[in-house]
Image 1 (cartoon, rainbow, N blue to C red):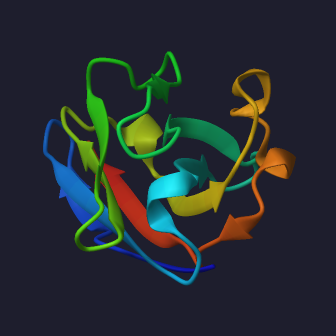
Image 2: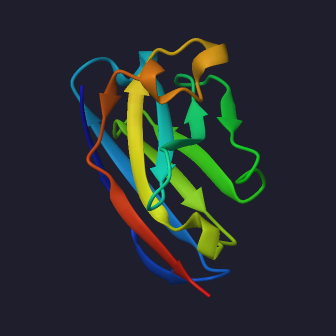
Length: 124
């Protein structure tokens, strides 16, 4: 599975961005898609995931109510709509694909495939 993330960029606090993750290879409908982020000097952290097409979605507490993960199986693409952005959301955002069990979705080691990352910079 190959993943290509895009859509990052600079934005002011309170603004919105929509990230995309185009997948190729494998069966998109059957694997979970996730988003993680890594801020400078910090560990990579879980943001959101969609367990498989039509499956459940899960979010980190820090983004609940502001971010929405979705997926379009006709385009083999996952999205992360980010609203009400805060400077603390500044990070490199990575998409991931795999089949993590529910208890491991926030563990980056449970995800098999990774995109190259896209930078989001939120200014105050």
